[in-house]
Image (tube, rainbow, N blue to C red; front, side, top):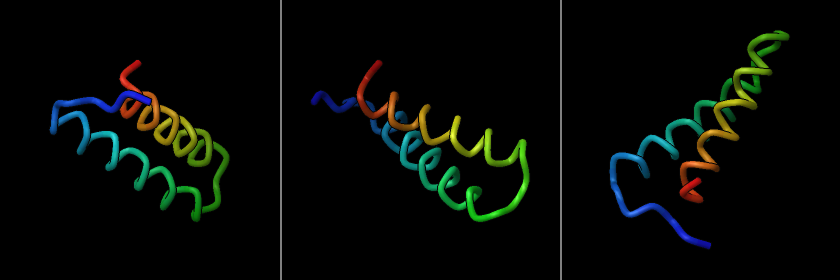
Length: 49
């Protein structure tokens, strides 16, 4: 597993994952989709893809 070395991208990935997790608590069709997209984007940034 290769983590990104840029602190900006690391913070962005953490923010995307956390905001996605907190958004999943709210009820709404589009909100859930955007929350899942934010979590996926954060994971891909962490993995460096």
